[in-house]
Picture 1: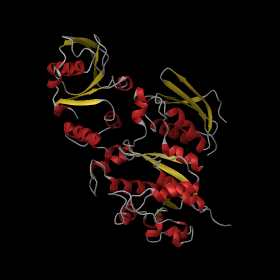
Picture 2: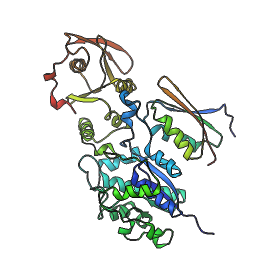
Picture 3: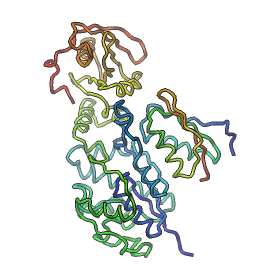
Picture 4: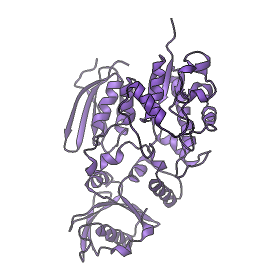
Amino acid sequence: MTKQYKAAALISGGLDSMLAARAMQEQGIYVEGLNFFTGFCVEGHTHAIRKKDQNKPKRNNALWVAEQLGMKLHFVDVIEEYKEVLFNPKHGYGANLNPCLDCKIFMVEKALEWIKENDFDFIITGEVIGQRPMSQRKDTMPVISRESGAEGLLLRPLCGKNLPATIPEIEGWIDREGLFDFNGRSRKPQMALAKQYGFDEYSQPAGGCCFLTDAPYSVKLADLWKSRGSKEYELDDIMLLKVGRHLRPKPEFKVIISREEGEGKFLQGYKNQYISLKTTSHAGPLALLDGHMTPEDLELAARIVARYSQGRNAEQVELEIRETNGTTRMISVTPMSPHEIKKEWQL
Amino acid sequence: MSNPDDIVVVDARRLLCPMPVIRVQNEVKKQSPGTRIKAICTDPGALSDIPAWVRINGHKMIETVSKDDEHIIILEVGEK
């Protein structure tokens, strides 16, 4: 009886990993998907939060891909372990705080652990030589294979013909002729293959799948680390960086102001962790205060929040200050004028 | 087979996808086939993500109910 070989596919939810997994299924390989959640993954979080986006379709693309391919998908929570990758990337950061090469090495390493634990034979990814400037280059592909420990058990079906043969090819588990020789940033070969496989719908993320590649997000994360004096964070910290307007008027504290109703509702969930401010005399945003604050700082924060309320032109605006233990008190302030909100406060 | 009245509750309120799915996945790993799990979520994305995860991983969806800002998803653990 012929052995059924099994592969674990790194599934991001994009087209490339979808095609790579399908290419292996075409060769009779049993494939299951792995999706690693670092906390920085872009998966419709802002759509889920913002009220104006409530009608946009919300789906996890990795799950959707798995369903299209008829394969199981396993999420792997790597939030804690990923911190070390982000804090000390051996191969450095990209244009922002994105440690893409170290990240890929880490994920393949975790996939290797997974296939050993689950009795699978090899790992596949949707990588294409030249597709990404940091992690998907001809010279970095062997680095990923070597430093992850996967070596010849890591197969890239979409560009495998341009790379040395891997164990699945050498051992005859798959046919090298059935691999592809995609190269470069053009998406045309992938789109043609998608058509050949009958995929008429697939995700085409415009800004990548990770918030760390996003410049404004990286600025806010760098500010968080600087303010704390160390590169520490918890999941709540990095989720909050995705929401609201962030202003740091003093090194000691930051104000996070909701920009619309959905964000206000989301920030409300943090009222027992952060002091919050809400305008009561006028319609206005909910704000969270992050840091150590003096009474003068509270007044400064209240004036900033009042600036973003409907009472911005009023002489006085009343706000409720809510402590994390639920006690409240009122404060009345003069809203800041636009020129008083310094540009350097805005993160 | 567990008694269907014994429902294991997964509180995934305030969590954004895929965290509610991950919480459900972790609970499913601990439970035996037939056990029912009730996930309470606030991210509307969970309404499509958890049923999709349930379907592709061989478990059974029982029902989804949305009330105000909370979404309740009930599933039954399948054979592993």
